[in-house]
Amino acid sequence: MPVKPAVSVSTLESLQAAPAAEQQRRGYADTLREILQQPETWRDTAAHLADSATRTMLRELLAASPRHIVLTGSGSSVYVGECLAPALQAALDIPSLAIAAGSLLTHRRGTLPKGKGVLVSIARSGDSPESTSVVDQVLDAEPGYQHLVITCNAQGRLATRYRSEPRVHVLQLAARTNDRSLVMTSSFTNLVLGGAGLLHTEQDASAARADLLADLASRVFAQYGDALAREGAADFDAALYLGSGCAFGAAREAALKMLEMSGGAVSAMCETYLGLRHGPMSWLDRPCPVVAFLSSAASVRAYELDLLREIARKGLGGVRVLVGENIPADVIGPNDVAIDLPDLSMLDDARQAMVHVVVGQLLALFRCLALGQQPDAPAQGVLTRVVQAFAIHDGERGA
Image (tube, rainbow, N blue to C red):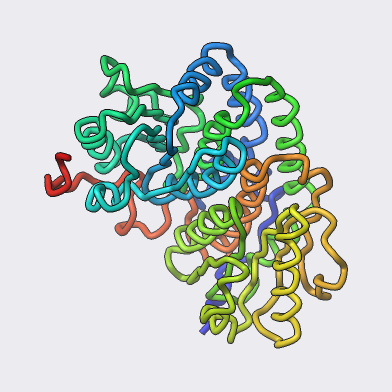
């Protein structure tokens, strides 16, 4: 049965206006600050990417003519890779894929492509048990791989362990992107932006792209925050997230944010639009929200809109939260939230995914607070900010 909200509806304005002690008592001070700081931190990360030393490092990685790019991480960090891989492959014409660090740890020989490549290790803290273990194994077993570490924690093992290893290069993000909250928010989007630096090593339009990104996120906060607050306080215990290409990574992350911040009280599913018909549509036999991240590519959006119209004809699901540019009126129901963002299509797909994720973060934040939970530390006793140490076994070590 749906879970009734435990407290009255909050808005972004009321949350920000609350005294610091009240924010701490309700357990949202860190999460709210870290969500709202994203536009400013994106500008900082963009400036770092525009630095000549950073651009040279990224350019040299690609100049080595890698046969593949593998993006790895755990939890949200591998979803960063999923936001990036389709955009990297399309722009660079280098096969690119995201592989969970756990899969590389247990099944490296069956998952990691052989030969010359770049392994991009993505991490907020860099202290998760899988992080350095995977790099250690790949350094040992695959000498043709160069390594790029993108991390938010300058003191983490991933950032410090390989200082004398010439095959490992570190892209260190600003300290404040190392979120204090249990859930990743500004760290996630800045890690995506850091990886997107591989798309533009030969030109410097980083500031302009960062300004557009920041403006779009600020528009979400200012124009759609209250609507997302209302939906977060509604009566639901399940939610569906849809995305295509890079936006599927965003859907995966948004679904995880809802699951994490609700402490498991809200079940969250993510799927591609075309994949939904093949069984998962049965998830919509309840009035659950459908959060739809729309592509800016006309050929892709045509499939997405067809699916949304089909859901409407069948009377499936509940309110829809639609995110995109120039959203057609016929797919917007009377109770739906249409987050229409002019100029979103001017961004590459990876950066568009960052904006989609912000919407998911806000919806999860409001749902968490409506349930009387604490976003900074939900599911206490179950989750920790950094996964605790566990034994690393040597079954996949060696060629």
